[in-house]
Image (cartoon, rainbow, N blue to C red; front, side, top):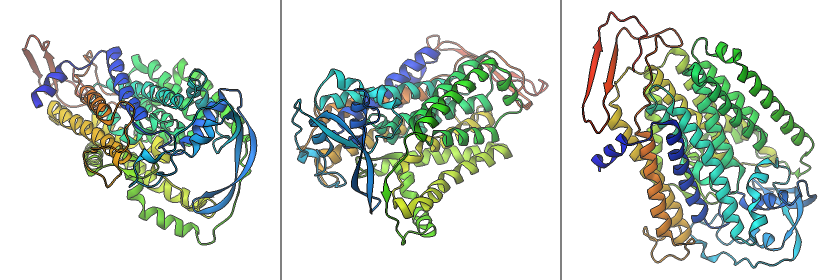
Length: 548
């Protein structure tokens, strides 16, 4: 097996366009498989988002306000939902999965059959106040295909949008001089939960992918400045920033937080070069317009819901509860599927946690003081934001926090650790080839295990046979087919991370003016030639001479 993976590495993508294509296909296959293999409406809040998307593309951007009783975080409330006119099967779709929703022991076979008809009824959605941009992007298949099958197409569109952003993040990581570490950071950030949500009709999935690209582009601009790549990286930063601003109101907070921690770990002079570039001013204007548009939408669509307060949930009680539940929220970021009724297996959680912890510990050992401060500060923010947020809102909304809410920001932790390690660790000190194959293979196996475990929950329930045979429920094409497809897609994960770095011309000095007292110039022939040579440069070489 190791020889096969090693052979793959020698043929892995190094050209930027080829790398983007392979990355896009990998993420699209993985996200698209989640789209097809997950029962309809079996993801958080998908019924509300499907109705919202179908209404927006039919011109019903606002709808009519309908006050409905609803339980929010175990608190009785009157929710200001939006009513829209849609075919009646959308109303059936909203409740089709209630027989197994939140009930992990019950397979999806009990779901009600949705009967398609042309009658139009008033259907309500709790997502009616959300910015319509995402819903315009994913809702159009409902105009081409009628009935529940249109939901699968909307999911696939969402998976493609997420894959576009993730592939751009992978290419950005591949532009580093020691790209294998940033690429590991991207794959560690793209957790199974990221791909699962990306394949559902839910703006949270695209939001997480945009956050991942924004982090990758900002860290590349600030920690690994390269003048010839500045324009391209600014464009990716701008695109990701616009998506974050137009998806959810919290987009601005994620942008500010990312820039803040990126600046803490930045190279000397990086900001000055960015500010001087014309593209930076252009994208600043674009982001300002996007922010104004998002704020205009949010300010003109207030929430008129009336929520009873709970005297039992004080700030300190809620904060204490959230602190004690921190482990659960972190595991939810890795993968907790369905309506929080399908946890990832031990293999997935342990591999993902171990990979991120390894990156963090090595970066703490190699980083400068500012790098360490940035990394520890980001870790504290990831743990502290849920505690403060839930403490402030607990008396009105109850204990509603989920790990996925923070993922657009939390994906920065493995990325920051990997980029610090790429910039600061000793040259050639980490057994690059074998380490990348081991980590890439482990992450691929963990991705497949998470997918299979979630699929098992829907086919036979969480207490069913490990091999779901006979299956009480099966996705279109059987669960075996999509398990094989996901396994094939996971091979792309190994292929991406194990790739050889692009050849780069020699440079003098790092951006922060530091360098090593010696350097190694390595020239390797093509894999077909099977030979190579290396030249060791004496220590008299000026400080800052770089690895080629």
